[in-house]
Length: 236
Length: 242
Image (cartoon, rainbow over all chains, first blue to last red; front, side):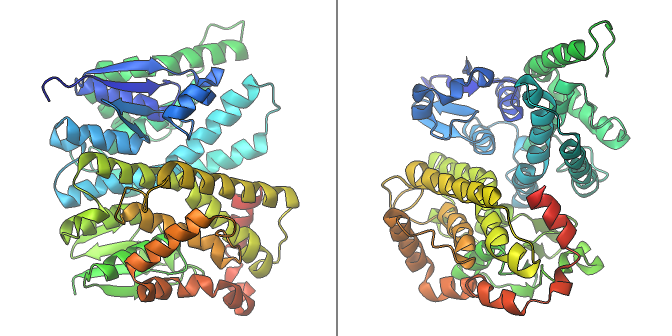
């Protein structure tokens, strides 16, 4: 790895997937630079960015000329390329399969519903669009079902989602579950088992977790200030 | 036989696992299940996969769901030829990139077309509003455009000169709307040429066998008992039409 340049990560920390990539880079001390791409300013839609990533999405990783999209692929690539501790993406096939199972399931289950909540509670109001409480209610019900599976099928009685130690699965999941905090909503508040898991993950990641999530806390402050301008109480 | 694979070949991810296992001569106990009959909700299947989806495998005491995870596990365990999931880090990353992207793209849009064009109107007796249908077709076309322009480009296969899991997962998804009577290859010569290459690499006989159920869908739906679909109806209408 001598003489290898730092990787470049194109990120916007409002995105769950971007936070996961940043936390992983920092926690594993992988030399990197960050280029901030502001989604709220549609910077991912510029012709320049589209040349880098025709899907016009984040995150994007550039490693000495090799451009890679999709957080799953990026995390797995970094885990192997930088020879990080085995627990992140274990070499043993049965253990690795558990992480692959989660990263696949994450897309249509966690990410879909979490992104929907963000759309309804943060983005649409920002664009001056009317609220749709019926749709939001449906999304929250769907998410509830997903959280049941997260707790009963993945976590069970383990310390972490795929076993005794933290892995890419926990990293991706925790970033998803932090997203609704943007609108002051803690979807884990009535789930002690998941709350305890989240706090273990937060402890394991400490500084890198807090740094990556500062944007979420900022959005939450602005959001709750708008809701109750006369109150300086946080809704959470 | 210690490896059991639970499959319904009507489902795209089941086809990719079936083709992968057969093509690589992996010995397994084929457990045929019916998703339309709701077997995934049974107590019996709950012992195999509590996520209540197919495919799923039971390898001795080891249980696994999610087609992508299953194929990566089988590739490793049975030492399948390198081209399926290359050891080269960057080629592997390209396969992973596709396998990740497709979940929220071709999978969703292709799947939707089968429901919108065939299952919902014919089996549930509900018409899809024109605007929703037009949007769904547009979404699928946008995904197919990205597939051709970004993932395939001018290469014979997604990662280069040889077939990989990316091509296999892509083809089974793209065949889903074909089952609904939609010719996705019309006006897409590059996509058609790729499909022909993939089918040849897999072996025409195996490819056709795996796709028999979905290609027969339009006929099968005529004899489908609407009563059997009743328990799905509210969930499906809520998912697709709300």
